[in-house]
Image (cartoon, rainbow over all chains, first blue to last red; front, side, top):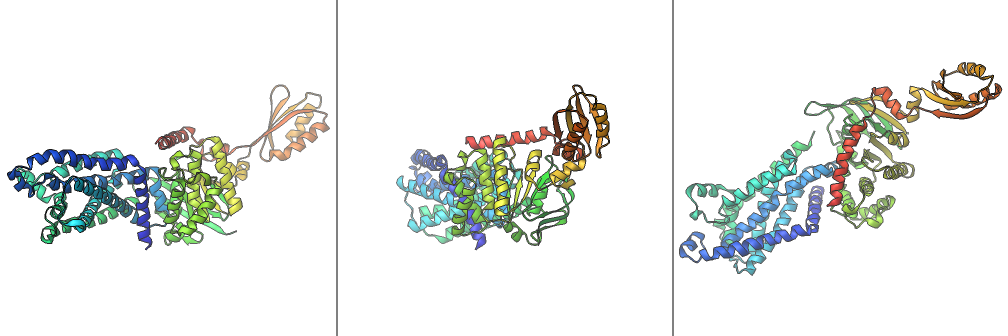
Length: 260
Length: 337
């Protein structure tokens, strides 16, 4: 119980700060709107071609790219939780938390939880925007709930990764550089925005093993086709497995870096 | 009086091989203000961090209120409060939120936090500003909030690492008042580190001078100063026939090392110690010899002199000001945002 309370209050702090940084909240809402509104509409023209429709597996490019935008948003958000721990170390807050009788493991876990909740909130907004733009969710409201959950689990992979890096990297600038270096390629080497059928062989091979693609699969299934567990469970299993591994990795890295 | 902290043979070698603390032993009594004085890098913060369980000592034993820090870190953490050098306040949270969070980290209930939170914020004069985000606070207010946070769980011992680093003289004195009140009104034991001589001198009951990871002297500030001797009494006598005789009998007084003569009847009398007790004697002898005294002044050794005596160096101001510069930059950045 104490452990859960520790995790929650570490997350609570991040969430208050997130809500208080109004510009940040607005930006996280405008970004998906731009992506869906601009790129989605431009690409909509292409998806009139039956050939493209066959590759996409749907007549609506907007519906096709919605999972991609969801994951991209979550990806950026998750990755930035490492930044917060570097900041905490700088201002001495990390030490302050560790001088308190809270469990050490609660600190990275709380940050991950905060990233997941923020991500879930953003995904919900994206879903609303997509609905507004005419995307139909084949799996209904329950499907939307599952989409949010999958995105939250996915965010844990990224926040875990960035936290693990943050405990060794120590400067925000370097972490930012690393993060920028990784996120864009991760998105564009997956099937988040373009179907694998349209990719050259080598890219398609990368896209197949890219974790982003694994997260895309169940979400896309829920949007385009509805409840088809057979098509969804491999993606969900891989994402959940990776998330668990990242939670443990982040815990290990954090403990290693703070025990001296 | 009971022992609050007992440290024996503490050694801390960092992973890179730096021997930050090299065999330190001391004990602090309850209700004592104990000062750790030394330049940056002397091992003050490392010692504090070992005592409060943030760092694992390489060897040595540490007992806090009778409990071994390594065996029972949870109990030790609950009985102490710690305000770090960096003033670890989250400036995007309000004063109250900072305090609330800290209370939660110590597993206090909502009710306890509400009750005690008000108590400490009022004590530190921050109650009116509790709902403002901390980025609107001045440097002194941030430090007060930081110390208030360290008190929310009613610790019996408070650790203050460089509590007035980078603050202006006025603010520094207010913080001293608060620290003094914590001891006198709330019976707290306080362990503070500083590289400000005056701070150690004014606040501490006892001072340990730490240099290169070792304690080189430990006593009451007064005793430390008396220990190195060398009070200087400067007297201006009126010139007269009896002066030669007077000087001769002054030289014969116990404790007087030498008398140096300057112009206009000014004489400097070097005394081994307790120069203040010698002054009435000087006045009496002067009267006996019919010599008038225009002025008399006593200069006692300062902690600076003590420090110099034991370490062969002065606390380098350059070092302190560099750290202050960095710190004030960080503060300025935080305030600007």
